[in-house]
Image (cartoon, rainbow, N blue to C red):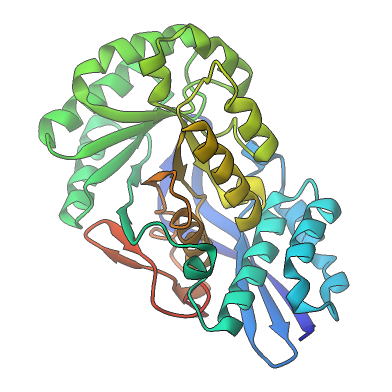
Amino acid sequence: MRIAAVEVRALQTPLTRPYTIAFETTDAVEMVLVRVVAEDGSVGLGTGTPAEAVTGESFAACTAALDDSAWLVGRELETWPLLLRELAVRWPAAPAARAAMDIALFDLWARRLGRPLVDLLGRCHVRLPTSITIGILDVARTLAEAEEYVGRGFRVLKVKLGRSLEEDLERLRRLRERFPDVRLRTDANQGYGLAELERYLAAVEGLEIEFTEQPVPPADLAALARLAPGQRARLAADESLHDERDALRLAAPPVPCGIFNVKLMKCGGIRPALGIARIAEAAGLELMWGCMDESVVGIAAALHAAFASPATRHLDLDGSLDLARDPARGGFALEDGTLRTLDAPGLGVELA
């Protein structure tokens, strides 16, 4: 069976609520939608959302790479593992473009076999809770947003930090007072220096913070070796971890972070994400699966990959929840803050 056509469409959708992190405020999302069509008419869907501040890939670079997709037409679909390796060679600086095509090919492969993708990859999990993210807000709005999310059934909140240490600590103290039974995790998005991080870790000792993502810039990650092993175990590498080469480096002693945050848009799709997962498993590290602001297509792809790794412990797959418009529907079920895949072929997604 050959690939008959590849279709690419650029999209922009506003968010229902803007959010702020340590280095930017976002109110809309630019994404690409990919359809890979086989000769028998079956279709695989993929989406890509580049993150220029993290990977250096602009939206223009993402779409330019995908515009050069004619080489896939006429290729044998059964050689899809080879096609996935070719993506890394052809588009080395466009991980979101690679991810969009990678997701579409995985989806098409599993659809044609009539099985959910995760079952073909080797399911390790059935359902897991996801966190939902609160951006950098004042205390009153932080508490109000948390109240809304808890009312919707979420029991894991991720709080963005990194603009002001004192304000960050006040927000966390007030959240813990108001919600003693909710799991709290934080993400500083490189917003702290090492001295601030040490002050932060000392101040939150009694607040039961689950873990903290990327507290310092990637260039400062080696300095985390001076922290106690127990402190480093509850740090997660995000902007420092793009691909398998980064995973190998970060898994070498002294390990700076005990958790890897895997994002398909950083590493280039499901295939390299599973490579990172195998490295984490071998090193005894935990996996968190995160996302950008994305369609349900990208979220479903990350969920299927996450459930195929025994090292998966945490999900942060809320990126589609605040899209004002999504080009697709389906992909997963969200019940009281817990995600599970659908009993449908491929990723279980359809165009809206």
